[in-house]
Image (cartoon, rainbow, N blue to C red; front, top):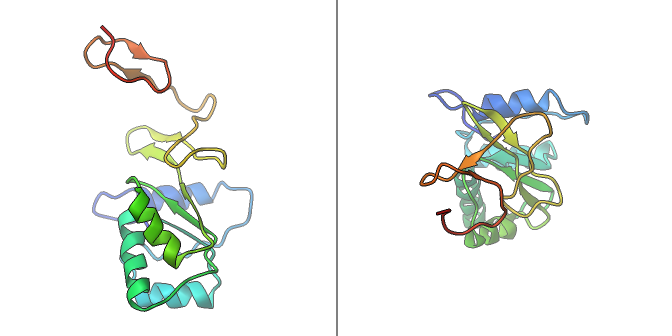
Length: 158
């Protein structure tokens, strides 16, 4: 868990709570986003950590450190990100130091609404699925006030 905790950040606690509800047994290493890169790299190898979850900015900072050290972490199988988007050049950076990692969003949530959507293996990068009966989400056109129901809609309703 490389998310942040404290200073009004909820992501670390949100992920910690979510892990308590998964069916597959999980060992959580609560490093937070403030962990020293050398400590994190050594811990990943020593404890065979195969999943990292955190903000893209922090994972990219760690990836840059790994590149400067000429290190590749082949044992990391999954990178789960949240809170920010990832772009093509950033994905390439992560793939250079985590060549065997599947990269996916950990979910879409907000402090006010909680979990809004999950990323499943069939989702495209940045795409999420809403859980049935979990929440109701309406996207409202800010000009017309109409509920937007179509996919891939460009432009505004008139």
